[in-house]
Length: 65
Length: 252
Image 1 (cartoon, chains in turn blue, green):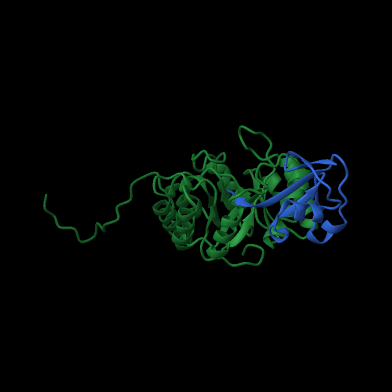
Image 2: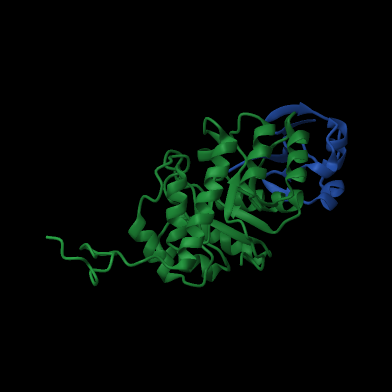
C-alpha cells in the first residue's frame, strides 16, 4: 500500500506504525509519532494499524526558539 | 517559581540558528542558562547530534509548538513533545499570522485549556493583553510569556507601558518576556521592570560572536534582576542635587 511518511509518498508492507518504524530503520525510542494528525504514544504503535493513504509523521528533537 | 521549579539563572535560551552545534553548546554554557527551548521536526540526519547536545547541556528542556497555526496542530505537537523530551513543560505557540507571528489569542486559550487539563505545564506565548492573560490563567496556566516585540525583530520592549501594566496586574504570576529582544540593554530593562525571566534566541544566535553575546545577555539579565530587587529610585522631572549644600564654602 502507499502511505505518506513525513510528507513523502512511501510504499510499505508494514501493517502497524511500529512495523513501519522498524522497516524504515528509525530508533523507536528517539522519535515521536502521529497518525492522520493524532498523536500515537509509543506503547500504542504496535496496535496503530496503517491503511492505504495513511499520513504518518515521525518527529525528532530539533533546534528551536 | 516556574511550576514549582526555582531557577537562579533567568535567561532562557533558544537553540536555533547558531553557526554550529559547538557554538550553541558554548553559548549555553557561558550564559549559564538553566532552561533552553527546542522544537520537534521531521526526523533528519542531524537529529542524533542534537540529542547529544541537549544531554550534555544538562538544562531543563522547554519544547515549543513553533509554527503551529491551529489548536489541533499545537495540541498534537505538545503531546509528541511530552513523550519525546519526558517533560510536562510546553512553550505554547499558536501563531495567528505568518508575517507578524502574532499569537492567535482565541486558539491559544483553547489549546491551553486542553493541555492544562491533560496535565501539561503550559508556558503560553501571548501578548500584553490583560484579559487574554486572565483567560490563560483561568485555563490553568501558571506562567505567562508576553512578547516584547515580534519574533526575531530585535525591537525590544515595543509597548513598555502595556508591559508595565501587565506586570502590575499579575503581581504573583511568573512573567517571561518572550521574543523581540535584540540587545542586552533591553533584556536588562525587562528585568528591571520586574519581569521574572527573558527568553531569546536570534539576538544571541545571529550575533557576530554568539558566545560573547550570550555572556553579555547573561550579565544584563542578572544586573536587571538585581536592580529590581534593590529597588530603583523614582524618576523625577527636575534636577535634585546629590552633593549636600550644607557646609559649602563661600568662595564667590
